[in-house]
Length: 104
Image 1: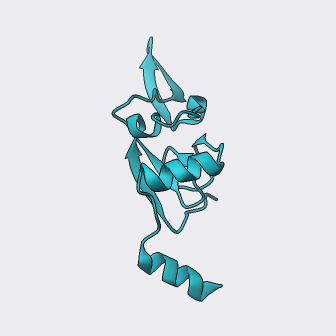
Image 2: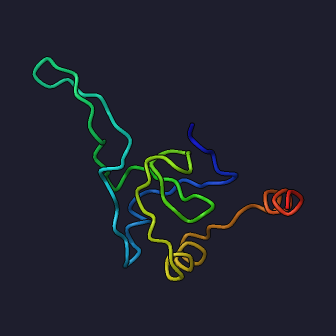
C-alpha cells in the first residue's frame, strides 16, 4: 500500500530542472494508457516543462502525492535541500511542524 507523506508541495518541472544537479528518473513517471495500432499499451508519461511534480517532506520528488511511488528524483543532499529551501521556498507549514512535534 502506498504511503502518504504528511506534507508535499507541487512545483512545475521547469523550476526543479533549474537545480544544477538535477537528474530525473523519467522511467518512474506515472503510467498512461495509449492505444497504438488498436492495442492498449501502458508506458511512463513523458515529462514536459509544463507538468508538475511533488516535493515531499523528505526532499524527494515524486510524480504524484504518494511518498514511495513514482520517485523521479531521490539524490537528496545538502545542495538540494538548500535549493529547495532558498530557491523554491519549501518548508512545512507551522501547523504541520507543531503536529509533528506533538507526535514525537
